[in-house]
Length: 113
Image 1 (cartoon, one colour):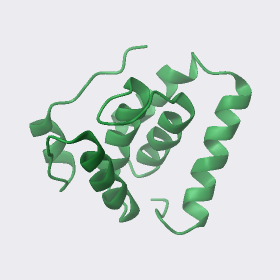
Image 2 (tube, one colour):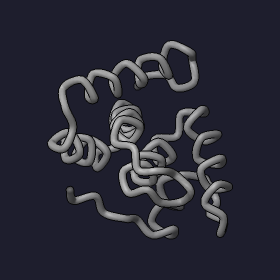
Image 3 (cartoon, one colour):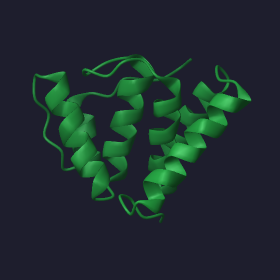
């Protein structure tokens, strides 16, 4: 897997989410920003879940979901990361990740671009 960690300064360029020292706080801010449609926040969540960082457990299904949602919003790197982790997932896991992304969209939390 070739997920590249992003620096706080690079991430701040993509989202209006401030970074704190607490991983759980960062996850909360990214979730709130993702709910408003910020692609960078979705990408940050994908990175957190794919690497098990910032208070997130390593969960490729959740990571795929967030990378997918970021890609839908036009985040180019997210599409590459989604493809990268897909190589390590089963077809069922990918289907579950896609179901979760569709559910997130259906609940009106993030509208497709």
